[in-house]
Length: 177
Ligand SMILES: CC(C)(COP(=O)(O)OP(=O)(O)OC[C@H]1O[C@@H](n2cnc3c(N)ncnc32)[C@H](O)[C@@H]1OP(=O)(O)O)[C@@H](O)C(=O)NCCC(=O)NCCS
Image (tube, rainbow, N blue to C red; front, side):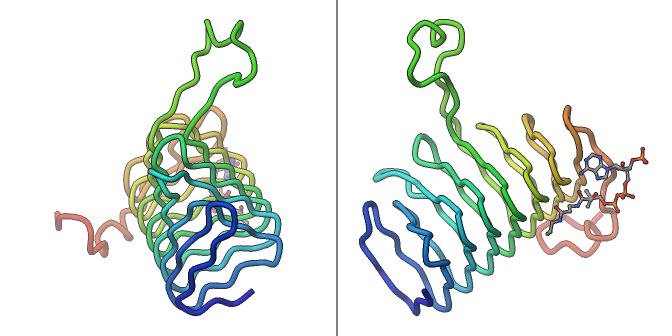
């Protein structure tokens, strides 16, 4: 489904800019998208009435991702690439069990994926996390804590692999050293 500057109401519906390509089975629910966004098959996207999921310009979301906003704000920046099966959650908890909720109350916290971030296959981003500008998250990483700009993070528990100094020096968003 190729959409040019469209608005379509489907359940929560969505708005988008130009040149947006959604796979046939993708039904965004309370989502605001910019231009040149690509969403591949099997991906689930939702925000809520007061907190639409926001996807900026030039974003690529590969197959079978879950972008779970709504409980809190989820913002995806410009030029972000999400590989297959990435899960991003703004809330977490045992929804159906008041018993377990005594120990694990349902929490809802904003998540921000800043500009120029690349997230590898099957990474999981948990509530409250900000991934800083120009950072890379390795395949399979479980991200529980925020990641600074220009940082490569891998593994579970997450660890810093290195800082992308070269990118940092060229970064328009960073203060020159
Ligand atoms: C994070 C990543 C970009 C790092 O690449 P790199 O800088 O070339 O890293 P290297 O391959 O040199 O590995 C460096 C170390 O990090 C470890 N490492 C790399 N990626 C890892 C990952 N995803 N999880 C855990 N450890 C990882 C390596 O085992 C290695 O450890 P060692 O030095 O103890 O042997 C890459 O490994 C990755 O995960 N890319 C995502 C790939 C993907 O999902 N592609 C889908 C299509 S977009």
